[in-house]
Amino acid sequence: MSNIILVGAQWGDEGKGKIIDILSEKADVIIRFQGGNNAGHTVVTGEEEFILHLIPSGILHKNKACVIGNGVVVDPEALLNEIDALKKRRIGVDDSLIISDQVHIIFPYHKLLDELREKKKGKTKIGTTKRGIGPCYADKVSRCGIRLTELLNPQEFREKLKFNIDEKNAILSTLYGHKGFSLDEIYERYIEYGKKLKKYIQNTPLFLNTAISKDKSLLFEGAQGTLLDIDHGTYPFVTSSNATAGGACAGSGISPIKINRIIGVAKAYTTRVGEGPFPTEFGPDLMKKIRKKGKEFGATTGRPRRCGWLDVAILKHAVMINGLTELVLTKLDVLDDTDPIKVCVAYKCGGKVLKDFPSNMETLAECRPVYKELPGWKEDTSSVTKYRVLPLKARKYIAYISKFLKKKIPMVSVGSERRQTLIRV
Ligand code: GDP
Ligand code: IMO
Ligand code: MG
Image (tube, rainbow, N blue to C red; front, side, top):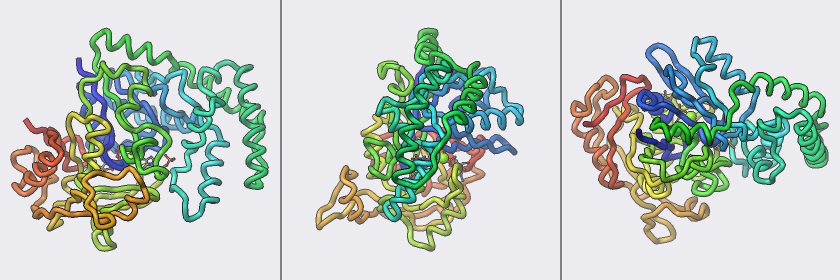
């Protein structure tokens, strides 16, 4: 029995989906605990590619329970589409999927408000996925949100929906000149969604704690990444949930004392989608090269990802905030023909050297990276099947990161496929 939390150590898209798929083999239950369908987790199994948005990436393995925990926000239409798409590809969702009755529901007004607010902000926009994530979590915290449990009770649902639609329509017409939404139309549509989702709905904290008491192994699948965490990320350029390890407990109903390992996933370089400071961002030439080689386009929105050098000051922050017990390094192969390779180890800001990732975004925006330069290996790693066969300079790169962070790197990924995963023994 071993309960593992896996989180992104950077700004998301670190390859969490691939690593969860690998680790799922030895897990009994895989749990999403925060975020929503802003996430895009890619799993490549031989010839096939799957992009999961709400359903845990363990779904591709048979006989696993895949739980959408209470901390997630769910767009029922997106979830039902994801279920249908998986079923069409003969993935047995009905035997595996369990959804918390406490998840908060994303409504059309959340998506519209997300979009209109971004438009209104102009240059200061966050660059959200426009999936309604922020407005839905805002309602949750304001205590006017609607959960699946309420959706299953038509009278209660209608009352709560009316309050929300009246309020949101007033905001939409006053601030944005929008005609708003019809209570009846949304009510009817969502009642139907509720009927379709009912069979998956359970008391998930009870289910998960019972699983632990039966010595089952739980694997918590983080979405987004440490720097997108609402508290510990680059606020306001963050998502609206706790994407760090602490979020796994609150978002699932499991006590921290039940957790055995906390794995951080980091790319061998850095990427970010959306706006906000990014000290190690490449100039145009390297940006073009790495984006192309790493296929750095969003799995959810298709937007080009911004790319830059690895920043171990960021990873040090991720080690501290998450209490990482180890790190998995992905996309090493993308650096195969880059030489030299730079790693940001600290920042220069206002004549001072900062060794720690600043908590203040104005400071971060003024930070210039202090780089350590390492030689590139200039060899293909994507076909390497054993860690010890990796080029020496690649192993030295990994060893440098490991030593800097004082953390083991037991797994290295050199391609999107399952077989392109090197386990250090
Ligand atoms: P996630 O959101 O953290 O699950 O990551 P995404 O799926 O959004 O983005 C990671 C992308 O990199 C996906 O297209 C993966 O198939 C791909 N990928 C994962 N690991 C590797 C790797 O080691 N090398 C390469 N070249 N691609 C990888
Ligand atoms: P996975 O799980 C990368 C980013 C958006 C934007 C900010 C806020 O695939 O790693 P939101 O729609 O959440 O309000 O947008 O967060 N973002 C992600 N970036 N990977 C993700 O998920 C992301 N989910 C949200 O681009 O900058
Ligand atoms: Mg992603």
